[in-house]
Length: 249
Ligand code: HEC
Ligand code: HEC
Image (cartoon, rainbow, N blue to C red):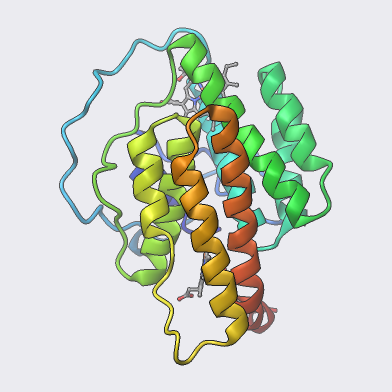
């Protein structure tokens, strides 16, 4: 969760996120300072792409509200991916509890907050993502991501996480090229000779779910496909991240 500041800068916001989300108690959303070490926020590897859309005037939602939704929703998504449904639920609950959060979003976030399993939480996160996209399309206002021309990151691990975040940003905006760029870069380099069969199977199943996500056209299909992709993230991490988690405690 610590790299959120880099993900944020990759997303192209002018301001840092209002809080550094943690697993622990909620922090003050207004005064909290991001506490990520500067060296964890590398510059994007490539110069920014020319911006496709001119910035829109943004009259309808207070920007801080949307920034907060983005941070909480992204953290929720990544937490499910690493099998921390408990963490995902608490961040989804923060969206539910945010005064002024749009009703469809609250309903979608509540679904996530009510899920106790990865399978259910994955599906619900996919649907939450399409709720974001749906409103951005309907209102004609929403995020205008830039610097999304290439996946940044100083090593394979960072690029893996950025790619996943690109896919998510592509889903919520919605912006199909960003979704595709994320999905096509998200499979981490895995060495088939040294890894266990279980990881190999997880990687194969994951690739199959990516193909479906790439083919999905409607928002609804994309949401469902993203849910399946997310479940596949969690399945691979169950095999690959266990020891890391243990060594941290
Ligand atoms: C009911 C409508 C609605 C829903 C639901 C919604 N948004 Fe938005 N969003 C907007 C509007 C309108 C804007 C443009 C005005 C603004 O920036 O507040 C926006 C802007 C944004 C921005 C750009 C903010 C900035 O300061 O540049 C981000 C990021 C964002 N939304 C993310 C999300 C995410 C993530 C979700 C779902 C978890 C979501 N939105 C759900 C209506 C919505
Ligand atoms: C085929 C296996 C595999 C798949 C599929 C996979 N990952 Fe990973 N992921 C890894 C490995 C291995 C690491 C650890 C990399 C390292 O530390 O060098 C990792 C690390 C991460 C981390 C950092 C976690 C931590 O505690 O260090 C995040 C976040 C992450 N992945 C997100 C995702 C998301 C989101 C998806 C799905 C869109 C995904 N991953 C799909 C293998 C996978």
